[in-house]
Length: 283
Image (cartoon, rainbow, N blue to C red; front, side, top):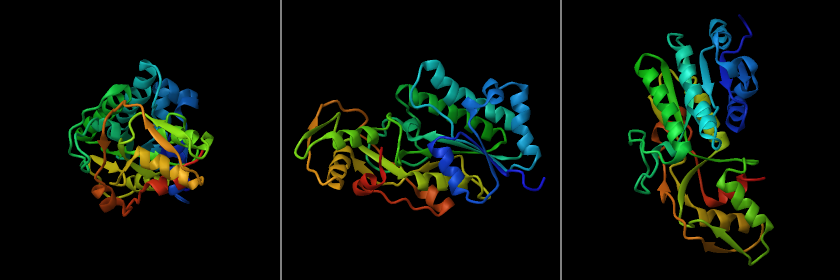
């Protein structure tokens, strides 16, 4: 029917809202599953609701739902059970399914070199492990014929991020610090690949519309930035100098993605630096 949404976005958080904005005037519907009584049950009525969008001409379904923290059951439900259910509903529908994965699926890459999508998944911890299980379900559905792609998101940069983001904590620590104070970091040399919300959301929107997609696409900048460099840039943006003290608690040393597929498919070339992170982050 004319005027019905052609792309269905599941999730109304940072990424879902960003994708909605990136799609501009494209016909879109947004559903936040945790707050939707029918979809939360994932029963026959929920299945009919999703397929109703397909019957009215939806060409793509984008899943931006997930949990960074929670109980084991909550993490499994959001990161594994939901995408597994969604691909079962969409099997044979002919629509494109775009699932938001995570760089945490790679685990310890063993190097600061940009990691390609072909690298094996070695997740560590509940978040990475459940995100990889959800991605694996999507890839199994793709192998069975579903038009599906996983956009593997790296570390998000945006104003008003959730408290679980390291950037949130960095900015809070810098903001309350006086000039010359000390900021503590678990391991200052930690190297991570960050991407602006607008770039990530734009890439996800493109993956829902390009003619053909590979199985996995890194959504990243390809630039590694150290945690101590980010803190110093945040302090400089506030006209402060801070000392950094290491708590000597190293985790995974480096995770940097190879953005070649993303750029080739979407035309997005994501810039990144400590100064850009400082400028774009906010509480």
